[in-house]
Image (cartoon, protein in one colour):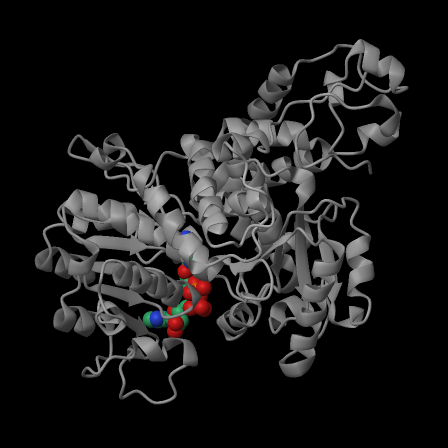
Length: 555
Ligand code: NAD
């Protein structure tokens, strides 16, 4: 496959490109029925295509007509994957022009269903699979990737896919989907994106028995052999793709926190489940404060779930509060956690390492309801993967305590949400400030329509990635996520808030990502973390590297 530069080029030198069926079968170069007369001559395509030349607009019409006829979201997903495998430019044109419609298909919730059935839907491989058996040859595998100028790698080991648990290699749908969002939301060139799955086995018995499972038939590697494989992978990435940002995605929390601590100051890396989620949620809280006219300092935030997402959000809130002048102890006292064993308090034994700093000196509460009654939180954040955990009684209690209760049901996919948008609005007497992890349709109650915000990490990670790439940052810091959260919150319009929407409309996401990228790159320059010289006009420099789904001319 011929490589395309990260910076989109509208004209390409003829001699660099394959001819005949080879170019038709190269998704990065293929234009399908849009190849012009001159290109058909120059590239030996005469006779290989139907004679009528379509414009890209007409191709989009064809795709969208078929898309809207599909009887299920999973079939829509399959159609889009097939398009991406055939013609990436058209795929991104379709996705970017219809992001509201496409996001729930290429990402949560549909991607969750697609991962569960990945081996059954399997047609063409995408990305790199590195297995426990590849120890000693990981760099060689990475070199098999056809594009050299990789700038973003999303890697998973498939152990905690959304809220669905261990899906082994079926989890590959997540890196693939996330990278599509890097391109669609922040214009990272598709050829600069590499999805990776580390196949260290699976503990999911039904997958191990499934003849269509695509991964190793063995239990998960743990301990030293696991760490050694990850370490070899990280080292190989540095060697083969030295400019790449490495995003860890959907690792179980026993590994996610450790790996983040191990690598965050060594390489250019972050964990989206911990840091990306934190930033989007903090932005949501800032917007919610604009509605309730409160301040972050006045909040008591109660989390259901004390894993990667919950603790990541808590840590970023603490940084934000310290930035507002609170001591670390005062800041931590604003965040409380209920996990599967009740309220996280000091007297509890065997608390996991990542929860310890939020274990307050307080009486034990066995469940969420008791914790709410005793703590009187202003905000309730669901990151537990426990469907319907925010019952009518819980929401009603929050509404009794607060004029404008903040209720975020962030667990993904939709089937795992702690409550629905409609429930939050109805049970709170239409006073809840609501956000979810997976999208919910607008809710109309007595002629008033509420547009629930989606606390989608896609508001954050593509912009952060774009900023990191633009200045070639050496590391990704928590402060970058803090600034990204503020930049995102500042992009929410009064007209959004009036509808109850605490995030910007998805249609503005490229513009929002560019603003986030600028904030991130500015910080990298200020902290001397950038490897690239600062351009005179940073905004223009960022916009100039953003990919546009426009066909190149081959003649
Ligand atoms: P995790 O496995 O690290 O943590 C889950 C936590 O929930 C653990 O602390 C566990 O003890 C707790 N828990 C489980 N059952 C519980 C119960 N019955 N009652 C109370 N707590 C319980 O997972 P994570 O990475 O933190 O993700 C959790 C959820 O958040 C997932 O569904 C994920 O999809 C979602 N999430 C959403 C976003 C977003 O919306 N932007 C981002 C990241 C994660």
